[in-house]
Structure formats: structure tokens, C-alpha cells
Length: 472
Image (tube, rainbow, N blue to C red):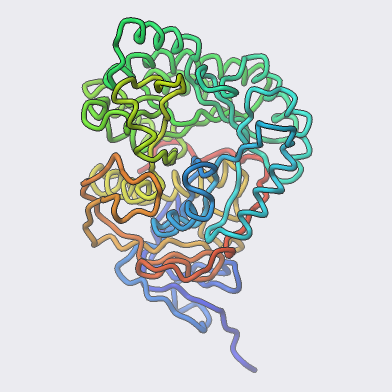
């Protein structure tokens, strides 16, 4: 009788889960993991990948990505794959000019992804300030779109800022259908007042941008978000948390058993408002970078270590430099009255920075990386246990990380159309040596082995409570 075989075995590396590091091998059959065990207990394989001296992590997920503008889904997927990602969950927009429904937009975007992407995709929909769009929300949720985002700020950007009653109405519908609502929490009316006052006083240099978006404006909006979430019983996710004040309010809600989750981003963990004097409008992001001598960065790192912050994501928003340059003259508005673009690229620096700065420099356990960039994104956004874990039955998505390589971040190595990085010249440790996506090699020593169209759109399920508590 012929001995049973598997397609692939990844051997020799240290297998990293969200809770432990194992000296084990991973057996893959088809597109699924079928066993995690000592190598001698596994059947022979048609292909053996030697990961000696490397970490074998679950495929990483970037859960906060904007790819509907200057970087499209195809380019964003390639950039993510080169950076060691296997799954993206970007934001999708419906067409504002016309009557496109969420269902129509979902079908359009799904076709584009399935034709052009090399990594797997889930999606969040941005709900613009158009209450009529809610008519198509239940059907869209039945299609596998379970996560939605709304903005509590950006009054100068038409269609962005949403009223509280519209947010509550949306929360009720999302909660009823088993979804999660994301909120950009800054007080738009307060920020509009402060911006206009600074403009009137002639304070339009980039260094004044953070002045218009104080930490208490984030806290105030988070407080309202928590109250609305309690009233509607809606699982709520605060995107790109940037302040200690906001974190303390979230911790309070979590201690009371409320389903309030949050993320932060490398820029808030590592950079400060000093960047506004150095690179000006390139560092205009929302919320802004916080004071160099303030408490926020240390508080955010502590929030990650203690498990109050569930995810680290990039908030990749790659506006090219030429669109940002007018901000040197007026950081708030361009000569024609438009808002100077927010955002910076980050998809290609997320994983390298979090391994180098979090694990290597700050002593966070490697299991923390598997928690905040794999399992928790999969849990909150309805992809668990298919994604985010190394266990039998999960998709065979793996990142094999070589910890012994030192590098320097340079935008010349990046694929994004932005053409710059806020982390230019940053010294990092570690390199994605290989990734597997659904059992097939995706990235191999810096080269992609899959063609556009290999990536798949994934229907998302209802959120699962993320892992919390201190990491050790």
C-alpha cells in the first residue's frame, strides 16, 4: 500500500502562533494546512521548504489600506506581496456621481480584484454622507461585506463627514446583520473652527497643522463613538488611534465589557510632529503626528503590550508628492479651495517596521506580531479561522521571515506611486524570505511567483472577539 503523501512541508523554522513558538514543521495539502507537528511525525512531501534559522509566521494582513486612488488594487497587491503580506483588507468606495449601490460597487470591485490581484482581499466599505446608500446595505452584507467605515471629521472634503444620527442609523443596521462599524474619530466641527481660525491668523505653515487637530478632539469623538455604540449595541472599531487620551477612554469602555476595538499605525508609534518642519505636507496625515515630547507614543506601545490595542495597520494612502506640495504655502487648503491631501504610503514598511521596532528593539515577543498583524485582523474582520492562524484547516498562508538581515528603508525600492516614505533611511532588521498563499509560493527571495489574478476576493463573516490581555 502506497504511503500517504502531502504536497508541501515547511521544515526547520520556528513556527510562530499568537501564543507560542514551536520547533515544528507545517504540512500542506492543496490550499490548506493539514498538520503542525515534529517533522518526523509527518508524511513525506512532494516539496520540502527548508526554513532553517527563520521564523514561520501566519500570513500577515494589512487591515487599513486605501487603494482606490493613486495606487490601484493590482499595484497595491504587488507592493504588499513584496513586503511579506498575503492578505489585504482595503477600503472600497461607491461612485458618488450617480446612483451606484453598495451591491453594484461590490460586484464591480470584486471582479477587478479577481482579475488583477496577487494577494487575497477582503473589503470594508466607506459610507459617505449619503443616508440613501443604506437601502443597499443589508444585501451588501449578505454578499460578504461585513465591515463599514464612517468619518466624524473632514468637513472640507465633500461627502466625508457624517452626522451622529446617520452614524447611529448605520450602526443599528450593521449590528443587526452581524457586522462591525469603523470610525475615524476626530471632532470635525471643532477642527473646522480651529483650522479656519489659524487660516484667518495667517498660520498656514505645515507646523500649524497639528494645532488644528488636538488630542482632545480625538478623545471627544471617541467618547461619542463609544456612547453611540452602546446605544445601538454595535461592535465598533476605532481606526488609527493616535493619543493617550483616546486610549484611556477605550480602555474604560473595554473594562465595562463593551465591544470597542482599536488599531494604531507605525507613524503614530515611531514619528512625531517634528516631521512637519522636515517634510511638511508629506507628513500631513489624519489624525496628525503628535508632539515629540508628549506621552502618546509610549502610551500606544503600552496599549499594544497590554492588549488594549488589537491591530497594527498601515493606513496606506499614497498621494503623490506633486499633489502634496501646495501644502508648503498653506497646509489646509490649495489655492482653488480644495483640501491639501491627507495620507502617506505605508503598505511596504508596515511589517518590516513592526518586526524591527517592536520585536527586535523593544523586546515584544514574536508572538505579538502574529497577534496584531495576523490573528486579530482575521478575527475582527470575519476571516478567522480561514486566515491569520497556523492550524489544520486554515488556508496555507505563511510568512517565512529571515531575522538575520539588516536593511535600510528607501522609497526607491518601493512600488507605490507616492514616490516617498516618511521612514526614508530608517534602519531595520529582518526580511521576508518567502511567503506562501493558499499553499503556493507567492514571494521567493524577493521575486513574485504568482501572476495577477491569483489573489481572491473573500467573503467576510461576523467579527470574532480579538485576543487581548498582556503579551509576554
